[in-house]
Each structure stands twice: as structure tokens, then as C-alpha cells.
Image (cartoon, rainbow, N blue to C red):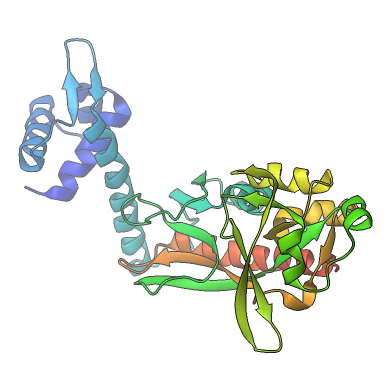
Length: 308
């Protein structure tokens, strides 16, 4: 079986919605299309479409296979274009990008919207998830990640860094005083945010011993949502520890203030992560370049706007 030809036939059937229309678009006969689809399903050992007298409907396996077929066929077209002098072609196809929810909403989504507007032949799918996505298993092209990355076969392009800061409202500082060392927080009300690295213990840098240390914290409010934790801090319920982007608007408005700055741990790297398991497509390369430059500007602006 010519697997690429079978994939093209399957995609045409899915796009046209009928065997007859797909056959006409490819210049094939109806019986040829029927045999091609049947042979493809037999080789895969899975039903790709449910056929009735009136219509064709993709199965779940068919929908998954269709996504991968489109990617493969686009990659083949790009490889052929590179050989035949089509390197300057406008990138086309699907791109799936993932980022943390709040950071993605505030910083990544606007950048990708501009990117999609400049490249009308691309379809960008942004997945905002507060978990580590397996790029290969979940068919994702690119991830924006904050934090130290584990060793892997992935490529990581560092675009900046993110501070982890302790904040409190002016009212809280007036009532409880400004802490001069992290140890003071063991006797102060603290907001527990279960969604981050900081939970019941917070990390700090001991400048004298030049090593990180942790302290246990407790307080009147606990949540699994960063925004809720920030609002609790802004309301004066206690101290909170967050990544800088999570509290940047509150800092600019004077509703929160940074404390214990000399004891902050090293800033976390912000990286673009993608797999090198296959040749990098032109659409991914263009996206990485665009996102890298724009995110660097965003992170520089965020750094300039921080005070404490």
C-alpha cells in the first residue's frame, strides 16, 4: 500500500464528507476510494469511519488519525517545497501551544493572536493548563514553561526569568509590621496557595550561608487558585508568595508591596520547549522565533515594572 496516497485519500474523504466527492477531487473512481479506505482500516486494525447510506462519520480513532495525517502531509509538502525552492512560502497548517493558565492568558495569548493575524494560513490552538504537558503523547508542538526543566530529549530556548516574591497589602504591613527575616513569617498569617511550589512551606535564600532554606507557614486562608490567593493578600488577610507576573498588576496599583527581597530564591527560567524527535517544521520555527522575541520584551517590561 502507498501509505501517503492512502492518507491523502482518507483526508479527502473526511474533508468532502463523501466517497464520491473525494474521488472526484482526487481524480479517482468511487470503487478505488472504497478499496483504499478499507485497506487502510485493515492495516491499522481500527475503524476510521462509520458508513451509512446517507453519510460518513469519523470515529474517535478516525478523528485522532485525521489530525496526524494532516500534520504528516503538511510536513511532506514543506520538505518538498524546501527542495524545489519553496522555502519562502507562507507557513501553513496547525500549531498547538501550551502555557500556564494565568501567564498564558496575560502574556502568551496576546502574542499568539498577533502571530496568527500575520500568518493567515496557520491555525493556532492554545492550551492553557497548569500542569506539565507531554508534548509527544498529547500532540503539542510548543510549550511555554516557568521553572527549572528536567533533563530530557526536548529543546529548551530560554527567553527570560521570573522572580518569586513575598507580598502583603499596605494595611497588613501597617498592622503587623514589615518582616526583616523570613523566620518572622512563622508567627504571621500567610495565604496558602496549593497550586504552586509554595504550599505549607516557602523557600528562601539564606544570604549568609549561600543556600536555600524553607520555613513552615500557616494562616486563615487557603486556595488552589492563584488569583484567589492574590485577592486574599490584597484584602489584608496575610502575606503571600507568588511568581512575579501573578501579582504585577497589584504592585503597579500599590495594592501590594514586596517584602523580604534580599531573601528571594534565584529567579526561575522561562523557556520555550519543543521536541527534536523530528525535523522542525517551518511553521514551528516561525512561531518559536516570534514568540521568543515577543516574550523577551514582555518579561523585560515586567522586570522593569517590578519594585520592592
